[in-house]
Length: 562
Ligand SMILES: [Ca+2]
Image (cartoon, rainbow, N blue to C red; front, side):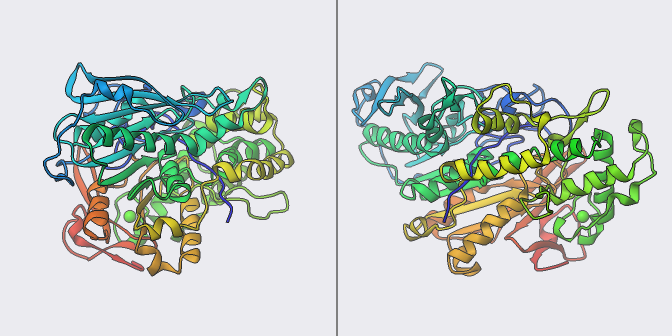
């Protein structure tokens, strides 16, 4: 089975999103940390190169200031998995621990938090001269006997701040930059050529070595290995979680993969579909028309699930055609044309070859289309998404000046094929053979927002379906891996839908007590109140029982239909 595609994505869109470890709005238990309260991806702000927004290194750091404090990783620290364990050496003495190909740069108690021993190290892989930075934080007391690895977003492998949320609830924790600083994809090139060690470090080596190092230092400090190890990430972090499951099944007992940026080489070319297609049609579509089409689709399909709440519970059942808008006015953008309707239909449909054959999924109806396909300026011009543009510049063309605006449909098709051929094995992260992970007793919770504006939710369903085919069917798969779709939820959070919460608790219960999650809890809070919903195992959907508040999860049950 080929492993292909990658990771990350992160991005951000606009306002917010993610960034490393966490992602927007931090559904508690989802990626470690994040940008709370930032409606992921509502529209429009320009995306920086690398697609990052927000302060690196500040997990939980918010993109814009203001808003509520980040939700804690867990409401209640978990009970210790190892009783009465005490450090057997000083924090500083960890600097003398010898590990292969590893240099420990510092080991000291955090002056701002005496309950945390912080170690910084790097690994290297001669003769490349690379440096994979690793940050480990170990509680000096009240260690819960577990290790947690954390991930990144976009091209960022992770950040020093990623360890903060897990260590705050008693985990020993690790994070890594996967070999390069910052959120740009420029690390792929060295002296104008692909630097395959750096690419491998980012694709999978960095997270694995962070994990090995983090667990070894924890064991050195306490004289006993962590009893359980977990990885928690969203976006790129979700890809990293599944890459660990695929390539290093011995690393973790359980993982949470939110909005995983798997199918990486497809994903980052898919993200350029809108600009390329609209440019070829000479029909860039302004943001207010995209927004109007999304709003019309939601209005048309909201009630299919029986609850008018601004959320399409199952976008696969929504077939709204934007031709209904032709001739109507969309705010300041003027009247909808046939061309606008065709372009929007093709955004929802997803990339196709010139002969019309399938390449990949589009965004579902209800997801914000402006994050990937907004057009701006006079005359109107389609704007490429930052991460996708960098993928084309540094990985595919190896030309930092490459202008994606010049891409024709034929060139796009060639780039699609090259992306998979050249990078599928290293970073595809779509290997469906999870036998080793399953046989070791591993457990994986995968979730994806149906309104994800950056990563096609259907790409995750595609992978899940292939896992089921490979691993003995739906029932056998559900014994170790479950997928929960989150209706109306954007990339790693945000949006009109209720986002997962209590996910870490659910994973620990599954791994440590063999209590498999039938649903995930989801909550959405805003000025008007709180809504809770169950997230059901795909392909089940949450069906309203017909009485009681539609804001209360108790009044919904998982069903094959509405
Ligand atoms: Ca609805």
